[in-house]
Image (tube, rainbow, N blue to C red):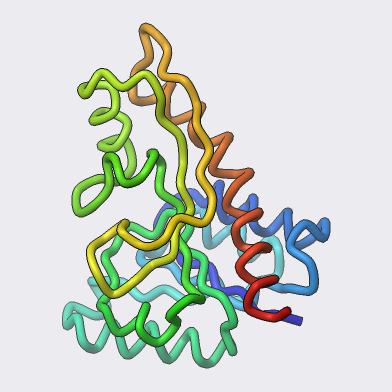
Length: 198
């Protein structure tokens, strides 16, 4: 049984997609050992509790020192005997030490077609605003490996496109892209685990 730790910051619809995919066997021979949130009081934590998954909150409020926060994150992932880290809407930039410790075993979902509209500042609705402002006719979602290099620059694992429609707002585009995210994040997690444990 492989242990997945999911890192979150918000409502957790991508977390729910991973929970459901573990439960129905689309991510085979795996369990979610930990949900680690950068913020307290977010609905992701409630989703985890409903599914009987252990949670931990490691926030900037509790750990204003970046080094102490990194040590706490690594300790929590180690304690959960983590085989794969899935960043599912985690809104903090990690210290390079975390992807170094989990090289080839940490993935992230990004709501655009990387390498376009990636990097620092491109998160949440900001990404969809940028896509519309650029006049792009397509957007989508990308699952990629997290590295200790530039943000959102790791090797792409899965990517799927959606059209940008006339009259789209950042919110309507976000909903269309989310449908893709919910599908490709569990697929990528299953694929990476398969590669790691053939």
